[in-house]
Picture 1 (cartoon, helix red, strand yellow):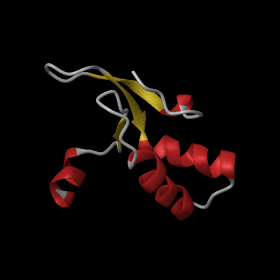
Picture 2 (cartoon, helix red, strand yellow):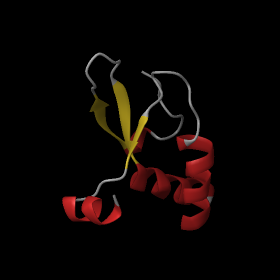
Picture 3 (cartoon, one colour):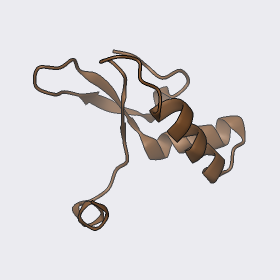
Length: 79
């Protein structure tokens, strides 16, 4: 499983999918908090950096999974 450097505090577990390798799962909100605190970014800067440089990177089938915690109401409204 691949790990994102410096983001261990944002790990929430391991994700499993049928017939595929397990993945480390990160909480996006915690990743943003880490970037803001560690790198002095604003929330907007941290989110843009995350989307382009972290979430946007594909490193093969062991690429980590990024989860934005939300409830069914948010899912139904957004998707």
